[in-house]
Length: 230
Image (cartoon, rainbow, N blue to C red; front, side, top):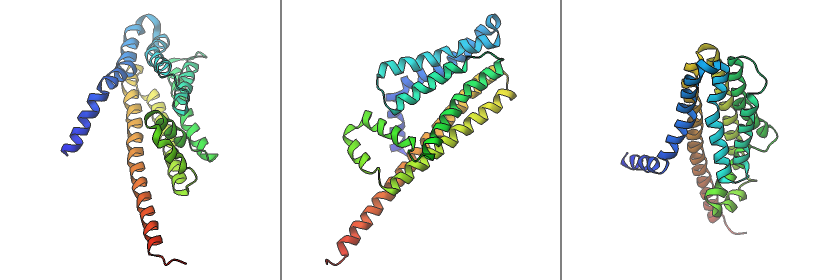
């Protein structure tokens, strides 16, 4: 328990500022902007104005990192789709629905990549390793043709795809059951809970599969060691 608490505190020390900025930009900022501009701009105008901070922040982060890989391309696609969501007019409800289509479309990209046998999780994991631990990239790529490894990547991709579609469906239902003001409070919580839950599951499942792989390789080595030489 103490070790876990220490890890949690260390994580907060390293990432606390970033988390605070994320909350300000993606949660408090849009809500406050909508609240203050609704009277003058109306629901649609206030919603468009409230979308400015998260889109601007995403563009700033993309420009700051200046990397073109699977992760950054997915982020950039999300930004482009978010901008397109505000084109075409319509009422506030349909504006909110079009925005949530971004999540649904990304979920479909995950499922589509699994359908053609090129699971997106593999590309995202590869890009992450290349950023953080380039020395581990060769050993990661060496597992690409391993059937157990490919199955793991496929399952992860499917879980993320269906998870994002489920989040979009829940958010879509909330659009028609909550006021716009309450939706701006609840929707980010649903989104962060979904991403957090999927990330936690991914971490657990990857560790589980890694342990199973290590045990399988150890058993194979033991079998070879005890087998009589030809």
